[in-house]
Amino acid sequence: MQYIALLRGINVGGQRMVKMSLLKAAFEAAGFNHVKTYINSGNVLFETPETKLAALVAVCDRLMTTTFGFSVRIAIVTAQALITAVAQAPNWWGTDPNSKHNLIVAIAPQTARSLSEQVGTSKPEYEQVAIFGQFIFWSAPIKTYGRTRWATVTESEAYQWLTIRNANTARKLARLAQSA
Image (tube, rainbow, N blue to C red):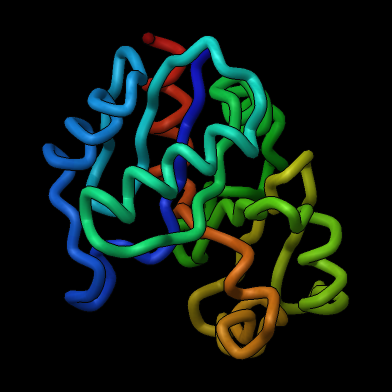
């Protein structure tokens, strides 16, 4: 089965630096097949017969600790879940060039719904939000971004339980998964 690991907080601001070639090699050494990485933000596509997401997260966390010397939170999604979510994305997501468009992914044991509740009711005058499975589609005009509920997520407890990819990255990961 094909999965995508979304590592939270690597290669950001010169912290927790991970070379993608080494990350790919670590996933292969852990027994995963058809491993691909995409850009430096910690996106790993891989295949394995294992179907328990918690077990996959544990293996990936161990490989991060043993290979790179630190642990990170990891969201693992099936490739099909991401492909389906991106195909079902709201019409407004990723279309306006004057807006930010993010895919927010819940990291277990949190869910997209629980994270959304923790962040609070969205402000429709400034942002658009839609939940699809463990994904949250979010868009906001750049000029009013700072007024949105999700712009302040970094100040909340919920922040440690999510990882964010922009619309371009999310779409590219879905395309890579489809072509595998």
